[in-house]
Image (cartoon, rainbow over all chains, first blue to last red; front, side):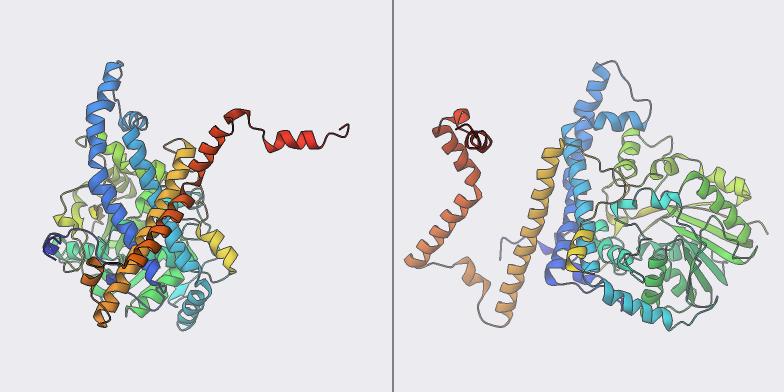
Length: 409
Length: 122
């Protein structure tokens, strides 16, 4: 029709049916798909249509009121506490929290209604790998779920990554996999692997001499971010670890179904890598992981990463940008939202601390520190490209910093 | 997993105290409204899918929907449906009106009558 909006101008998430499927991806009905479509559009609306006026409200009434009352903002927490009293920030926050809750509900229903079927498919894939320490999935019953995982469920995901509702249950993983499209509005791409592709592209460009034989990915969950790395370095042996069993078992079935064979999934805590020898990896990677930790565990992970790296090897951490001195307090306060209202309790602290200092204390040399920036690499014919989006949905945009170091030879 | 268990687990509360940004009563109603908004979008998408499939199969065109003219009888049926629907949705407002007419706050509550009819000395 002539009054139809110009299709070329369409900016927003693609239809959910563009999401890539693999053998253990949950089945979805028409209406379940439309629920995710609605939620992806809701997140986009929240970020592009509602969020900008939070800044207007801050500038025009929140900050002036604090000033009129003789107060001043010493830090981002002062800003956030003042925002909490503003009706528009309240509405945006309530809607953002609700949308996250609805996303979890939608994904969990999809995963739970077929939980037994998914469990048996994954069980078959795990069994096909055999057992023993060289199998595609290796459990370690001695690994304890750390308090930073169990205390509050990250990003409002009931049961987090580790809960099995019955033996062999993988619904936690299937929920995450099926719904991440809604949370990110498709900006992570077809297989939610835009972060991994970005890392590969960055490494090829900036560390062309890195020829990894052994790669360790810490906090891998479903392996969605590490699979592009394994695929890009087919001669390398990739070991993906996580503390949670359901995600690792699902990750194995998912990886094999997607044709990636040079990766194994091992239950282990990055803070205690004693299963791995000194100087046994060329590359240690974490992707959107550090913010889920605790101060102590992060220190231990940095230390252990240094130990297991070979001289000349690299560690790379991909995260949302740090709160620097030049980042306005308003932006810091907005980026902190997930820490306090989306169950990401370490997010706030992690983004203010000196990551370089952590790396130096772990043993890396200052002249070998690495800093860079990446945006998700996606199939741009179908998926939104974060590099071309000018907006900022604080903490959600698929644009990250790379912080790492190379171990001295 | 039983249907009952799956329904309960799908809507489970994540560990950690839930923050409320508005008064809890308002936020509760808003959350329910947003869930209904979601389901309306889902229903709308399903109708859209249906229309497009019917059009692809040559059963009808979407243009026919846009230019649809009900017969007088059909229009009456549709009008009656709309009236019944609105009355059902806004029943609480009707009750408020009846309450005012019945004398407002002076009307007896069932609890008051319960005491009265349970009086053994009656």
